[in-house]
Length: 589
Image (cartoon, rainbow, N blue to C red; front, side, top):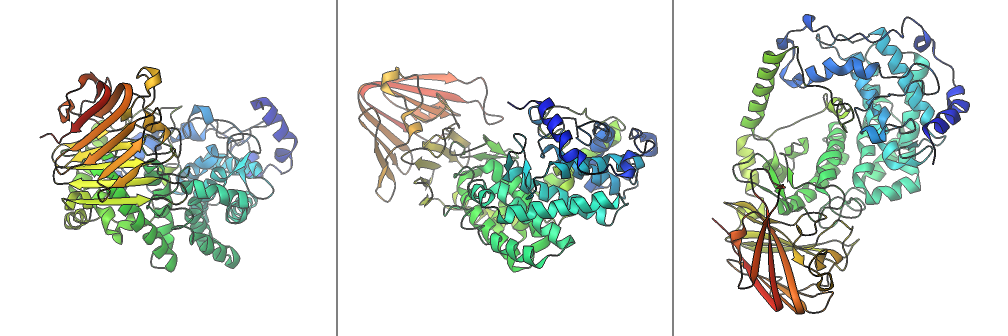
């Protein structure tokens, strides 16, 4: 295991001694601490509606800037855990240095409340951080994240995105030392080239699309600043894989070769928004819209509104990386062309209410702000500064209402839709009946260990989510317990199943791993489940209203201490029988 001391000593003997210390960064006066904010010079009314999130960052910024090490082998390292969490705060981790964008934003921002524009002490620390970042880079342009010289796609492609935006700010902002400015430009170009050409990075990106689509965001930004015909042609060539190598025929973006709404709706959508700012109205912009349109048709089957709430509930147990039961509204400028995405946007009235609440809080509490949670993953991360100058678009109420008419589970009363992937043999079946909507997933084996297959989701228009199988769950995942474990193991369906579909895909049957058969029938007003197996049978059904489960079998209801969906209680209904078990799931009022 490489220790922090080993890394620093090795770095000091190589990269850090290979380049001169720039005069501006070495000047003693310039290395005076970045001063704390003087709030007496700022009124709450100085902040525009678009900047109401900035008082927090502004108030804590000096602590971040002054965390930059100014001497020794760590010279230039941002040694504070406000981005990526304490466990990732290592001097070899280039992801920590993405906060260079935070430094550049405050160094250049022209807002009258920004007391740090062109600040000499900030300039010195920014230059040190950029020098450190450059020294982390491999000769062929890559960066590491998980260990010294363990070059990977994420560290390299994310670097292009965040550093390109920092370079955009610096190009027309206050100056920094020209040598380190040029080195950073050259380093960003090398990282862009590596991501576009390195076969290992490209191969990895096929399975982790959110990591690779960083290059469309950062590449578009960098080449807008520093045109390069060869790299532009290569970037356009790589963009053509958006809808093929990076996206399943089912519509989801590949994350560990399967669907993961967390990464797609967050990081990937950030990438799309940034790329769309530069490519909108071009053939490359059309590629982004086409990809988003295909994704939206996947999304509408797997994310539905919870009545009376301002969030959406997810068909979650098919997710391959993160774990999210609910999602906030999804705002993306690609909704200007992709109509279905408008159905998921923040309603105009809610956006206006959020602005009013933020301004009232600021006027009431200024100069007090929320504390900085040092050690948290995103206590003061660079994403806050990434999209501030990029194109944005929000739908009107009428456009949102029209979009909901295209969301099939909301607009239709009866259909069965089946979507399949070709990279992995997994099948997703979606059933709409007048009283309910249900999702079922089957595969010979799960794509990843945390997936739970079978009956994964039931939703009704009036009640909202009724059944939600939990990602990685044991008792909280739907299915039949393995018989040899006495009903105390993962459900059989966690290991996969060879499902056969009939009756227009309204009936599913599959053998159980321990012997026997299981069947699921999506009837007009209920779902019927039957299990036939020698010996004792234990079946678990994770629901938000136990009244929906009906059976002559022995039933026990176990309320869960924590509910995955705010505002609803969550229980596991356990059914027991011998030889044969039958039960129904019926909509509740």
